[in-house]
Amino acid sequence: MDHSRWKIGGTGAACLVGLAVIASGCSTPAAREASPAPNIVLFVADDHGQDTGAYGNPVVRTPHLDAFADEGMLFTHAFATTASCSASRSVLLTGLHNHRNGQYGHVHDFHHFMAFDDIRSLPVLLEEAGYRTARAGKYHVAPEAVFRFAETIPGDNRDVATMVDQARPFLEAESNRPFFFYIATSDPHRGGGKTSDDPLAPDRFGNRPAGYPGIDPVLYNPDEVVVPPYLPDTPATRAELAQYYQSVSRIDQGFGYLMQALKEAGQYENTLILYLSDHGVAMPGAKTTVYEPGLRSPLIVRHPDAAQRGAVADAMVSWVDIAPTILDFAGVAEPAYSQQVQSEGIRKHLPSEHGLHGRSFLSVLETGDGTGFDRVYASHTFHEIQMYYPMRAARDRDYKLIWNVAHELPFPFATDLWAAATWQQAYQAGPEARYGVRSVEEYIHRPEFELYDMRNDPQESENLAYLPAYAETLAAYREMLWDFEVRTSDPWLLKQEYE
Image 1 (cartoon, rainbow, N blue to C red):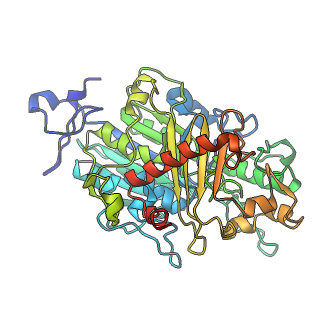
Image 2: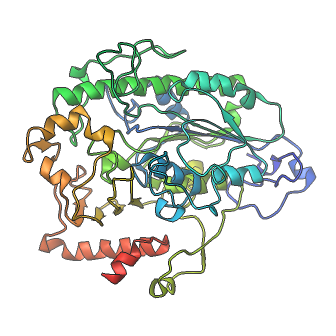
Image 3: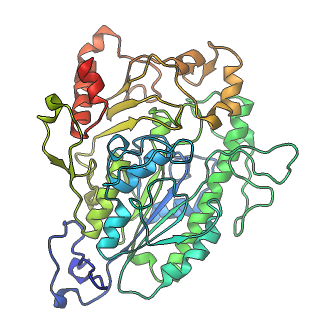
């Protein structure tokens, strides 16, 4: 691609330059007189694990996502930084871990978490650079002044086809300015569940007997679903997984509908498109934890000018890398922030300012080379307000260390996860009952440190942290985690300092 051909119109709009360079000035009029800069679409599912045909699930039917993977690049090692909806979305839209951006947990009324007022979010930065911006579907971050989009598309968060139809005027508008379209579903998020006195109510994963416009329901036999090792293989689990699969197939059709709309608008070939989920599936053992099923998530990206199609990348990337990658693609400079750590003993090791916590993986999209992308971090603080259980994690290809900061407390449950039939069936059987690779007691009461051998024990079933043979490994990964907390201005550093 001739990067110099892009231009942005509009009074006061910044000029966009090449794919992989930070904007430092505008190109000459002669160099940018041709077609507009590429658009950006960020599609965010809600609680979708790596459950598609392209990711190897032999049962769930996702033909549109599978076809999209054939057109783009599928990341096998993509990770959320926290398995909590609001906090994770704040990371996607800021490039900062939630312990730094201030969105510690859920935004809604009685939880009331929200980001700091000085945070510069992705839609704001892109709009200032000349992009038209719009959002549709689940928002779930605050305040709106920080996460500002110029246009809000109406619609039911589970009804993707209608949201896409409502967005057509935005997608089809004749403009020399590119667009950034953020569309987020509520599928396959767990809901309240059907009640006996309301036969038209949706089930636990939003599946309605009446269906949704433009969607052909795909039903699953509980006997045929794939029960992952972190869950117990019980009738309750299988029933819930069948409902989850149905919701995933609904997302798949909605995503395909959006791709068709982009093609009809003549924008598909000129658009960077990212499909991902805020984090893993809404099951105990996944959501709200920093275990693999909670953090490891789908990421499929179609770069409009990638050299390869249908590529598979094993680069370890994180949701904190999404904003830097999109800004890099758009040629927009990252914002700078002052450090927030108040402790003089810690602050003296830090520069007075810092950029985003993640880094661009645009080079991976362009070349397929993931060299150097071998480590990710996680930072979880809250989910709901009553769920104080901060966790930090460092993971590379060899080991994963989890620090359960509040390990003296029992692990708290989100209201919907506590009520899940999958969990209740195990919980009612008693503390020694097995829940996947752990007992119920082990799931609720956790040690301060958990160290897992990710090459030989990817299910995280054997904690090595307190074995003498792994003392040096534990010390090395604790140091790695400390360095991460220092670099990202983690307020929980103070706890370690005074202890």
